[in-house]
Image (tube, rainbow over all chains, first blue to last red; front, side, top):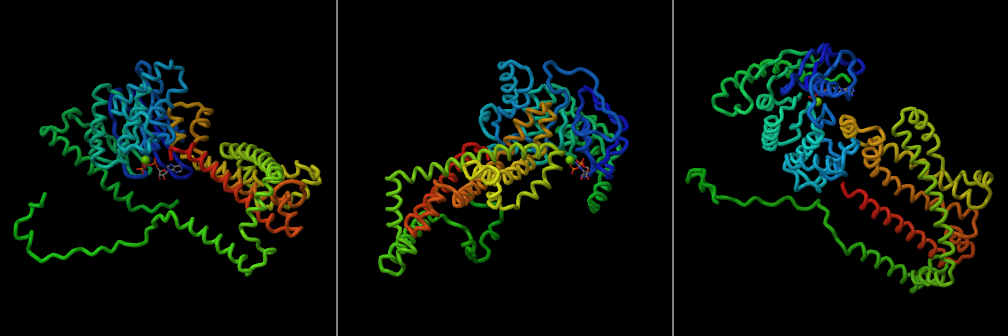
Length: 257
Length: 274
Ligand SMILES: Nc1ncnc2c1ncn2[C@@H]1O[C@H](COP(=O)(O)OP(=O)(O)OP(=O)(O)O)[C@@H](O)[C@H]1O
Ligand SMILES: [Mg+2]
């Protein structure tokens, strides 16, 4: 599925957060969005997913949705957003219960989602019993259960430690290897963007404007190869160059709220 | 495995000194028997003050006298009669106040108009000592049961409203956002997210309203009732039957304890996930 954002502006009261964003997420691509803290990345994602109403501008989707898709645009959250009173399997069930599925099909979706994320043995556990990494895997399994056409990921690894982050990146890589689900991936971590994205959008500090779009030529599954390192280092330099001054300015800003 | 990553000379160059432990104290340890022992000592001291004639039995009868008064009450059936009357008033009044309070609290929790109207009203009525309204309720409903139900119900209503709507406020926004992003209908979000998410706060409110109901039932029964623990305590006091008076007080504290225990069990059952 393609997502087309046209001339998007957003204000919270007087605070201009996004200004004139034109962006298309292509079918099957992983588009990373980086930008300094508070520049409106989460807002952009919320607007793209239809849970924040933009002040002006249009959002449209085009293209096919996969078979059995229940929720074309599906979020994966930074804080996992699991219901603490529901077990792992019931957290998946939550997003299926309001759809007219047979009991067998619901079970099948839950089971395949859990098995893919290696959670089958934990299906009866409560979220509080799981590590952060496992919780986010539940969040991913929940997203897979609705067979999404597009994933919106808001810093999905930020709440995790560096090693867990590495492991989950591998999970994402294999996910995008198997089914090329279109994704908009917000992060402030350059390494995540360099490992996972096809293109990287750099936003300016607030109000977020589109500064540049950088394409990473190297195929995703070869980015750990020695031969890829020169190109990746170059892209990294370029991104850091774009973002450094902005981040520094944003860092020194005093909130006037 | 010894650390062999340093050269030999660095490993044993200077004489070593043990690091002195200085992290003691300031942690609370459990002393299981201390509380029980304190009770036993308290009761023993109380009993002996009477035995040695330090305190007149009329003003403070010994625990043994209170216990036998209680036993006598249980035997002649008056205990059950009074207890039944009080429990019925607490039950009816509390359920009325709780049902109405939760309904209004829910409306205020999810509807902005209801909140705009409700918050000032609740703030205005909440501080009224509800027992002061009993005379009014007696005028309205007569001296019988309804005026007591109304007093208790009214006293329970406002704290329930406040507990319910602030519990709904404390349901994490991100969970509601998540549910919306997966297309859950409004009613499902209410039932599957808002209600269970607010449950801890609502149950905490029950604890407060149960003790309010207990206070109000005693006060209401002291103002005008034939039966009920409050009426019994008042009568015993008027007749200077202090052993019976204290037996009534004991029944009331046991009642409070029982209600608290039931609520704890309920919380443990319903809030396992916490
Ligand atoms: N609901 C809201 N009401 C008012 N202001 C908001 C709201 N949500 C976000 N903001 C403000 O809008 C700005 C952009 O927020 P947003 O969360 O989109 O930024 P972000 O790029 O995701 O930041 P971060 O990197 O910290 O996640 C911030 O200054 C934030 O304080
Ligand atoms: Mg954000």
